[in-house]
Image: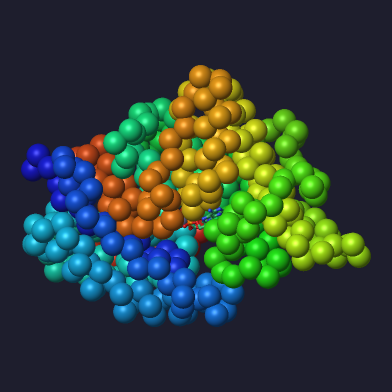
Length: 342
Ligand code: KG4
Ligand code: ZN
């Protein structure tokens, strides 16, 4: 096997087309993301059929652009990693079809990659990277999970949300406050203008004694607050600030508990909600105070991107030294628990 491998990564699980190019020796060479936010904004959320069609439009030009930026020829590729799930079936199939076709044409392996594995390894793209083992807090639009990560493919689930994910709670609450899609960034921007504590929202499962989360009741609590006779629109920012504080507080308490239970010192935060400034601030404070260290991906690798998929694929290939081509048949897995991968 060659000393270094050149890996293309393709991400198309939801509303971002992402392409990344990673060399197992030199690291990330280039990546490009096309976000469909403008396309879906008019509908207040992702429309799966529109997402798939837009991936079809963007994906090949984006691959060309990424290869050019990385100064690589298509024929120099050794493998292609692509997101197989979890995600929207039609959107996933676009990336899978392109990756498998390219693999067939170039006679190189196309490797199925778990989207959340991409997220949780993404802090390792930074120069100050964590080392195995660590605790990962995955906070995305679809998942809120605490995992013990012992190595590539060695993920043990410690706890997760029993209902809505943290990002989903941000999105749904933002929507009922009349904020534009995507709700997470909009709600956290509004929260910076308010003061937490002026409203008092419940801290769901904060003291449950385990590492489980529940966020679905929060949007109802927010809705109830806005329906009070004395609620004024100027108080929206205070309500947003309190909502954010609750989510951040519960995530911090459980993450701290996960470190305590596992005896580990490093916490890796991954997924879109990892971009939240308040979460970053409080986790740094609270974990730091106990002699631990928190690692966040760079902001550009927090939301969906192809760099993390190329990187996860490169780590897998380096760990297993396997670069064999499959049969060319492929499937996607819209639902796929991370703990099931080996
Ligand atoms: O990881 P991601 O890009 O996609 C999924 O795999 O789900 O995460 C998207 C989620 C959305 O729910 C979005 O509202 C949330 O991350 N998000 C944020 C912020 N930026 C993105 N939530 C809170 N604060 C933010 N700054
Ligand atoms: Zn994601």
